[in-house]
Image (cartoon, rainbow, N blue to C red; front, side, top):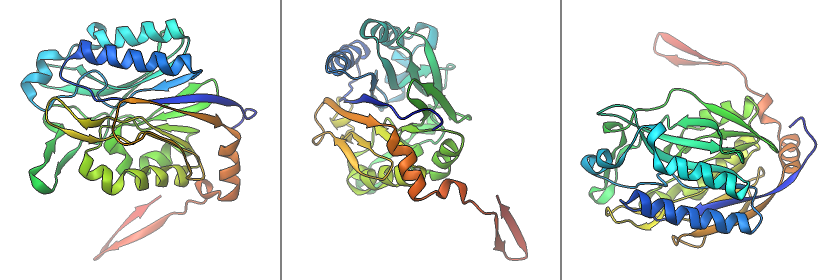
Length: 287
C-alpha cells in the first residue's frame, strides 16, 4: 500500500436467502443496518443475496436486467441512508432469455455502483450423495478480473467458487489489491472440508485481508450451505467468524498496516520466476 496505514470497521452479513426477492432484500437490509449502527464503514453480503434457487424456471421467473433489479436499487438507497460502502456479494442479473450473470456490486456511500464483477468460474460439480450443480447451465461466466478503490486501499472482487483458482487472487494482489472479497454460498459438504483452508491460503499467498460473507443453513429450495462467514488477516489469522450457519453479522477492526507487515515478512508476490513444463516432446512456457 502506498498510503499511510488506516483502521476501519468491516462487517460480513451472513444470510439464509430464500426464493422470494422482497423477503431477502428485507432480511439483508435489516442486517446491513445492524452492521452500520455498530459502526461498520464497509458492509458485505453473501453470494446470491437476493435469490437462492435451484430450478431454472424459478430463476428466470424472478431475475431482472440490472436497470430494473429491485434489490440493487434498494441496496443503493441503503448505502446512501447509512453512509457506508456496501458490497452486495452477488445478485442474479438477467443478460438474455437464457443467461444470467452472477454479479457482485460495490456501492459507494453516494449510492453509485463503483464496480461490478461477474463471477468467472462456474460451479459445475458432482458431489457425494447425489449432490450436483451445473452453474454454467444458466449463468454466463465473467471474463474480467476487477479491482476497485476504497478509502482504505484497493479491493479485488471475486465470488465463491473462484476461491479454488489461486492464480486469480495472485493476479489481483500483484495488480494492487489490499483486500479480497469472496462472498459465497458454499455447500455444507465442501465447506466442512475446505472453506477455512482455502480462504486462509488465499490470504497468506497474497498478503491481503480476505472478507468472506456466506450463506448458511437449509434453504427453501432444499440446498444446504455452510455458513461460517470469515474475516482473515494477511498473515492468515481468522479475526472474525460467524458461529455455525445462523443469519447474523460479524465485525472486524481492519488495520491496513498489517498488509505491508505480512508482505515484508514473506515478499513472495515479487518472487515469481518463469519455468517450463515438459510435455513429451513439447514444452509449455509459464511466465
